[in-house]
Amino acid sequence: MGGKYSIELFRKGGEDAGVEQVLNRYENLSIARAVFKAKIGEYPGRLIMLRDSARILARSDQPIPSSMSSSRSQEARQRAGLRPTSAKLPDSLLRPTS
Image 1: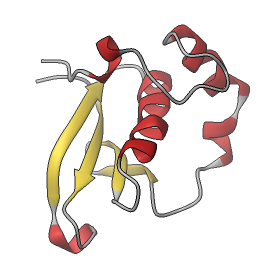
Image 2: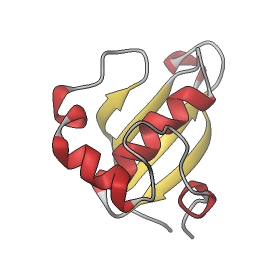
Image 3: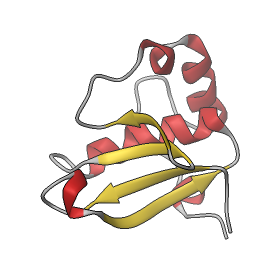
């Protein structure tokens, strides 16, 4: 089934239009947050949500919570193979888990 945390892309039209695709699922929240940030750059103007089941952790149409800008997120990006200034994630992390 995949990981606990999902990154969801919504259809054009926003939340009321519904989910178009679950982009990724991860067990690790730090990795999910880093991927969420990267996906925002890949889909400009589209609504993307980071969720834990029905709970919304972050939305692309709202400011990123300060907890996602913390040094822990920086560490997660580094563990994911990212340079601190890079928004590009390794292809292995961008593939959904099954």
